[in-house]
Length: 156
Image (tube, rainbow, N blue to C red; front, side, top):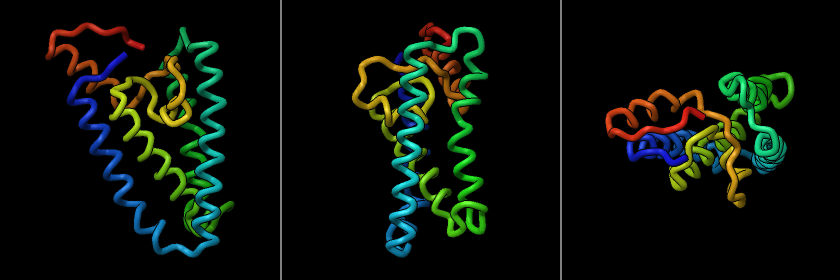
């Protein structure tokens, strides 16, 4: 499934905006802070690699939007638990890792013109098959673009 030009531009703009927000923190944080954030970024990528592998083997046929919501739980949990003063990573390493991961994911999806859940984009870079989990944020703009352009697409 490919997204149209508007969907790609929206994803590109959001990815660039997120990376613009986090970039200064990667430059100014202490070495310990950056290493912790990088370790969390790698851990998040590994978690989503497992989720993407599972979603490719068994696509969420009955409740794809429930699956799309559930897929966001690790990212949201890391953001909340890793906020400044948070219970796990008190300096904000979790927030930095989560926003960086999401920004990079949006850029990958924009470059590949993929549809589907953006948080699964990084682990699927080397894979030809894509997990069939919809994106909650861009589902409606993609469908609207399809209707305006006269394209008909599956709803996955």
